[in-house]
Structure formats: structure tokens, C-alpha cells
Image (cartoon, rainbow, N blue to C red; front, side, top):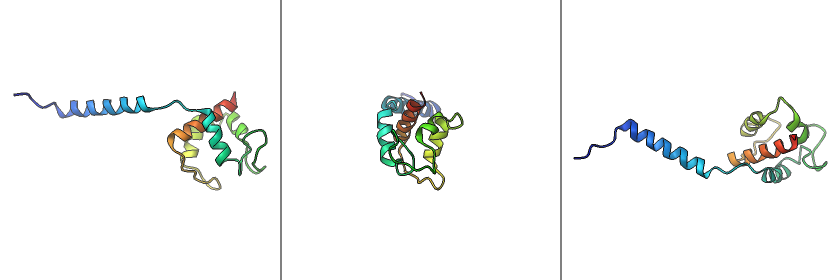
Length: 108
């Protein structure tokens, strides 16, 4: 008679399978898609591309991208849980990564 797998081993195998599945389905961030998102959602307040949209009351996306105190992790956190007056755009994790990739392209 075959013994059932040990519960810890079964749990470990399930966690490994979930990790491999999520890693295989993860797509690299797309700065072009991030630019489209920024043009769609950010231009009412921020200058995004070559002076398009924005107001002088908030920083341009280029200045945010070049600010050493506002790195990729800061941007991720901010877009995940923004504070007023910034609206919560309810971006997906992939969309946030695309915006981060776009901002990183501006920083170069």
C-alpha cells in the first residue's frame, strides 16, 4: 500500500507549482504601454509628453522620473495607494509595472 505524501511536502510542492506558474505568466514591463497609460490617465494634472497636458501645480512625469527620492519602489507604492489630491486609478500590478518602466525610460 502506497503512503500519502507528507503534508509539509505536499504544501511545498503546491507552493513551488504556484511560484513557477506565476513566473511563467509574468510579462516584462512595457514602457510603451506605460506611456499610453500615462497619456490616458495622467495628463489632466501632469505634463507627460513634450508639454502635453498638465498644470504647473504638480511635477512633470519627467521630473518625478529623475527625482532620486522617487525611485521605482516609491512609484509602485504611490500608485498602489495614492493620497489626495491624486486619484486612485485602480491600476493592475502589470499596469503599474508598465508605468514604472515608462518613468525609468524618462530618467535615462
